[in-house]
Length: 120
Image: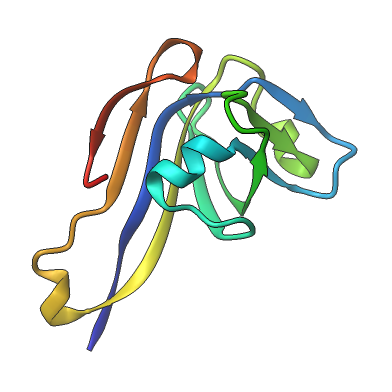
């Protein structure tokens, strides 16, 4: 049997921009994606801590070192610059491996800089 577990999490990511005219997705600094093991076009679930909105989309890399978190397409209506997001992805794990599973988690502070990390 397999169970669906948290794989990657970026907590308290500050939205830096929005672009309603883009096709869709969430732009995330490539360095942050690498840190938690998020792949380009990977499905993500996001929660906006400012307004309670939750939405699914996919991750696309923003320029490395930019610290950018960009709401694109329809998701641009679900937040504004400065809002804090929790960005999560999940994976299927065999039950025996799941008992010791540790997701890769980073917590961001001012300027979207990493202030804490686990499982990385």
